[in-house]
Length: 342
Image (cartoon, rainbow, N blue to C red; front, side, top):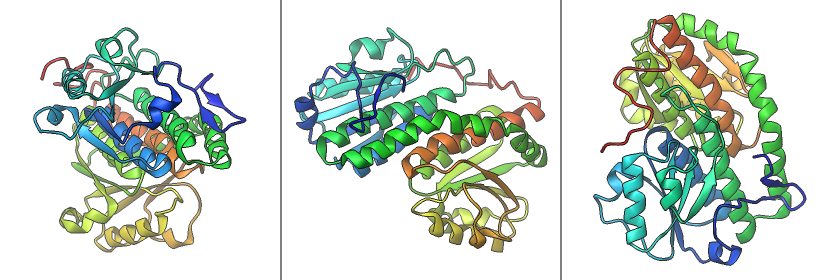
């Protein structure tokens, strides 16, 4: 974020876009494409863009994008997201979008990577080298970069300066809030001790925190080898609820946001079936009393910033469970840091 936030006007500046404000305003729609963790970032970015910038946005798996017949024109902006900038599927999707006339932007970490060189513009996330295979700080930085881009586009389109400044203030507070979570890592370690022998996990969230649930489940799968699924909380009753019993830990990402009350009803459904409820919350709530087995509080922030904060305890949970199970956290089996083959 450093140097990219404009406090007075409530917007952001991204020097590498290679697009004028007028060019940004001429796009009719946006496509975000990525793989794995970067796809989860893209899901959050897509919600932000439609919510704040009010522009039709679609999120695509890069591995599927060019094998369909996607609706892409010269009035489409295609944003490709990759930590390494070398992901084979994402690179191929970007080339296909360019072939169809789209303008392409890359959100990457590695300077001088292929996506950085071949895209029309973009933004480096400047997360520094990420040693572990499972992406953590790159995910947080990708979501932040997408929020900066959304803020810029939204302020050009319809977002008020007051709302823009609220978002800028929330971003300024974010590093300290993340540190607050990290300072309480021992709470997550104690939780990991309790569930290190679990065979399955279910992660549930709504709105901006549905992709956060997907990311939490992916991290657990990647480094601890425990089967985990992420779902929109309301979709639980359309199938996964059959899995819930006293042996099933269910992680709810339930900060006090605009869909909080809906999540409470889903917690009630799990508790009625004797599931073990782990809640990532942001304040004391009478409606959750007696329903939660384990709770971890994150600082309160704007709805669209919660995925960055909520992902940290989920990453720590996966980390501590993996360590306690004797897994190699940095080099999980069968995985590579940069997927350069299809």
